[in-house]
Image (tube, rainbow, N blue to C red):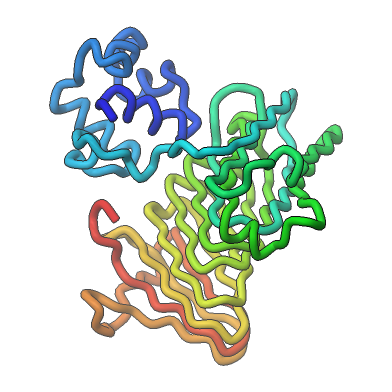
Length: 295
């Protein structure tokens, strides 16, 4: 994959237009078009800016391998789009899926892409239903009785893009292996999950995580309160190294611990910080550790 192909794929995965990328980098749209068509390559300052913007290392950005943050190609896919005309609250129930990638995007369309390398009849096996009300929108993915939830959790990948300008509050329910949320800002984000891994990238606003499984939570940025609600679970949360945050324990038998380099250390939270991580529930623990750069 060339640099231009990779940049275009990463940009689309983030739901960002060429105009928006050009604005963030302080260059012309023509420059972005030139880079994406491999008619030219950015200077080192712009390469560093692209690396920081999309959380991808410079080595990976310039390598010939497919970037981790890009949308890979799949053998089978089904795409659904729907126009949005005003800010709304979203209630999204995706059911079973191996991976879910949720991101904010430019424009005025919800974009739902179902992908798989195993399930050849996605359009027949899964139905995307969008119910549009004046102030709210329900997005549901249901499966035929001939497709098991276990099969969906092994084989189905969902890419969901929501127009940022029309997003107020959101509730998302998923049963799977991994969820990644990026480039999203809303008044309140509630995640009702049955997943082992959650990644938050450039997510602004309060986030509430409801999950009773042991989780690996990676917060690549902190831009609002994060509440983790669990019962009888032991989870880990990575936060940006050097970030200033407070930590609060509520509930019964809940504990927060801290690690550096795999070893337990004293608290490195700050009770006066504006960003707060809160653990709620019963007999649960959360280990907070600094994320290594680029992870």
